[in-house]
Length: 205
Length: 197
Image 1 (cartoon, each protein chain N blue to C red):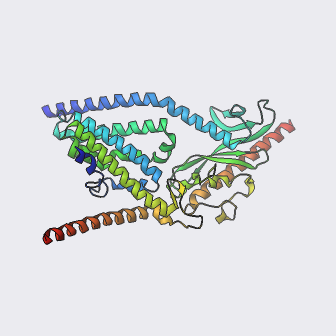
Image 2 (cartoon, chains in turn cyan, orange):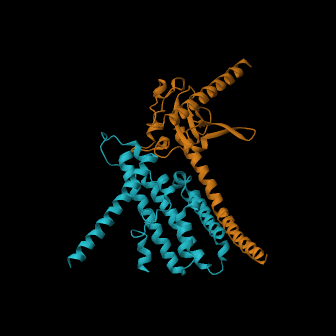
Image 3 (cartoon, chains in turn brown, orange):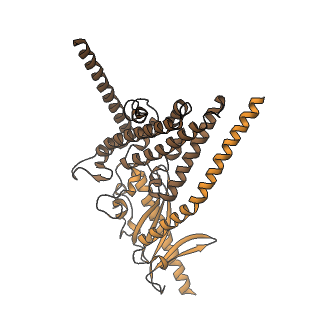
């Protein structure tokens, strides 16, 4: 149970490990504020769809599962869109463009298909939470790099003095590719280092 | 054959449930969204016509469409504080709607961008608020500008364009200049018409 909750954060992080949903990651990671908003929306949609799909998993005929999944996901995305427009207009203003993208975000369809449609409700909700938080965390991490380097701010707060000349490239699309690539490389390098280290250790024994 | 009917029935059932829950959510958020938009506009009007209260700003309509707003100095509605009009401009990725407040002599009081979906981090910085500032720095430049010499720096004007977003800056600036000029001219000719009568 705990494993299901935490594996989304590092071990099978949706962005860096499963490499799912990279398209919205590229688009919304230009500022930390947007990253948090998008992450929250994804957590909500992911948990809700996982819950519903797991609830009715035995009633869905295998052959038409995909259209049903998409219908359920689209419903929750529209709910988020409407609720946000009504109760958090500021957030809706900056995320309005990206909310509809969640429908085709492969993290959600991926988790619904590979996990929620085969597992009990409680595990599915835990999986949704874990994966959702993992997604948000990676998004915030990438956005932090890009916002600090590209705009000199973090969550809107000025970090450097007025003499700092931000590298605009970092908040442009190429900055997203660079940041994601470098962070992914770093994670793999850490993994590699660890396995090699372990190997040496066990050999010595 | 049997499968087709069964599958259609299941899909229809799921669709009905989805549609039902969506219409319910739509119902409870609709009024909220509308009042939110109304509140935004009222706030914006008060911002671009400093000195006028919300009840002293009157929309002037023609055939059900709002042409512009008149802001009076007080509830007596005798002295005009300024006018506000909505200007649309084709930006880089979206149609930008800006509310412009001008006084009777053709000086800009304030501008306020109502809607834009420009590139995040570039064009969208026209709404960026820097530390400790009350209004977005880019829009603050328009304060007290005369509409006759309104242009971005690349066109020899005084409005500093946003780095990497000259198209957005120019689109907004030029559309404000053009629309307000036409507006002031029609207002002036309307005045002379009245005197002629």
